[in-house]
Image (cartoon, rainbow, N blue to C red; front, side, top):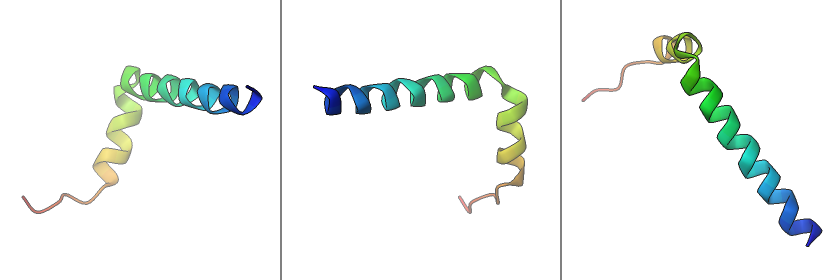
Length: 40
């Protein structure tokens, strides 16, 4: 059961991190601007 709780916490933390980045458009724009534009 302990091993099962470990990955659950990690997944929860990942979601919180993604939500935090989504809530911060300025932080998201920084890496996006630095990223090279892919050829479409």
